[in-house]
Image (tube, rainbow, N blue to C red; front, side, top):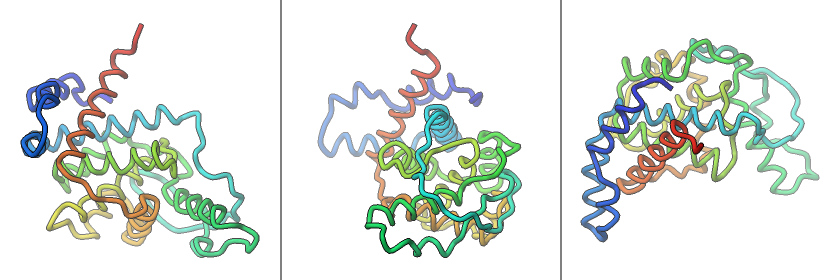
Length: 247
């Protein structure tokens, strides 16, 4: 990622001093976190989101987190400026599983089907940075939305392990995450048609991505200033580690 990484870290250091806050406790530190997090410019939060997703792609490049369940290959329609052709799948299989599968087996099949909705047959022709900047240009969102999206995806990929973030699915995954986060955190949101057009997908495809994202995240979208503050610190630490690996 090349969006002024060093300046981003400087800006975050100026916004809050984590060592000083660590010495505080109670409602005072919660209030301080609220002020500090929302002083971060949205473009900086977008940079952190981009860096976090790219780190997930790098760290999971050699892994395959999708459940290895054989499913018939069928096609769902969807076009995309940024993500290429959609992957074949059958929507009706979300609720149809062999009777000899137990509940765990059925859950794995559901996760597999939902995860595959985000896959493209080919890697997108634009980088994630370019894609996010396009979204920010035509549908600018708040600091909280960008940070919450990062938190949702990182939890799905590293804690729940219901999806593996890759070059082939990160654009659609981020688009769906932003749509969900915006509806969760903001009183007003952009029209569905506008998000779909800027994101390079059809309105129907965006609806499918949004629903799939909600189920993969198990509808756990509650965030507060403290959790967003912790997400900023986590992304900041990981960015520093990636830029300055131990010798």
